[in-house]
Length: 140
Image (cartoon, rainbow, N blue to C red; front, side, top):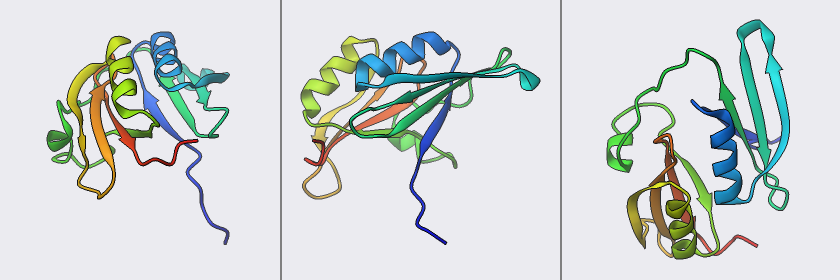
């Protein structure tokens, strides 16, 4: 059996178009494709980062309702399941300011991470989903 590679993460959202615009503007994604699953009334927008190859799948189904959303990383760690998505960014302070300026909520200002040599910050996207920003110095 070959090695596995994470292909994408899926995020269910209330406003598919607004979420697609925000993640494209905030993190440099491009809209790769739009899909429809008529059998369950599901719309999907797949975003791709052309330079890095990672993908983010945004999903919307009418009648959906918000699930639990933690206010911060400590609260997120009290619930089992995915608590946040993380992006490695070249300029942590600039990216933090940018995504907050685009309508993200400031959660944790840039600071040293518990991981040596790494800096981190947290924001929440406009729907309240936690997003971690990391600066590992590996983004090209």
